[in-house]
Image (tube, rainbow, N blue to C red; front, side, top):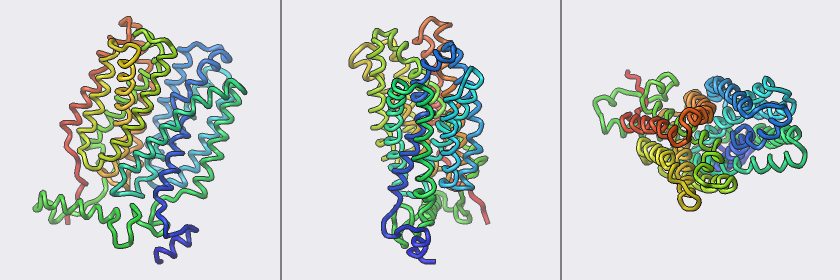
Length: 440
């Protein structure tokens, strides 16, 4: 069937490249993970504590348990994404997240709260984030890094609006009704996108990656060109070899994937911990609660700028250098806590913290398709996402316990800085993997 006839059969024009529309849809998907993200949940913590007669430690423990359980499902979600595609997976995830958010309005105690956290973390922060960041990879080859950066930047900005909307909702209609409203918002927006708007691959509508014409370079051509480059570097080995995508097992045997996982875990654990305790942490350095809360602004600006910058270079710069920059910024922010004061020093701290996490997330999302291929990308990134989500559960508790043991945040952070340092060293030593080969 011709390109134009295949597009007509799908009910869409073959003349206009649909990839950038998929980028917009994916950014909206990522933005609607907000109610399941730490920043979104934070707006509900105090009113739920008061209504359910729970302590902050009890709520934190429920959050820890819920997040850890939720993370175990993500490798399976990644496999489903590879087999069923983005559109079908999105329908299930969107409906499940909407139901989970609405169910949060019915929690009545510690056990039901923990179960509620399982749902919104599994389908919000975990599954929907994985679907959103995977969605645009098949639509681009040359501009894949930039496209994923746009998704991350816009999506992160939308996530930052969720705490504001939730706070306004809680103040006007109460926390239970606000949970229901957020669930309705997810269903009303994402289910139509999945059923009527999203297309899994350009081939489904008779197009090619990057909007290239039929005789332009597409994904398969990109693999051929990469194979040719490998052959030039090692002609004897490549002469009889055929390239193929990594399976999840093969990818997990490459040190570079573990370096990327390390970056996700280090930034997930430590930036979440420092953000979760930000009011108290910066309060010890002389900032008022308002000044400490305002520090989220430079973090957001740095996140937006960094994901665009990393997206523009991720396909041209070796992953180790971006990972090194991310871990250096994270270590600098951690070690600089005792020096933070109101004003420029606090802004610099916020910029370093926001940029470090953004660089690691953008690197993993942008580099994984190039390093490991598309066929098993969901399964591979499902493991990365699962470990990253699990780390966000451990971070706040680790920093809190460390503060209790040492008497302050700064001492604890000096010990925890060993994590980004270790990841940086691993990244510098890990070779960049070539595609696995099968010989004739």
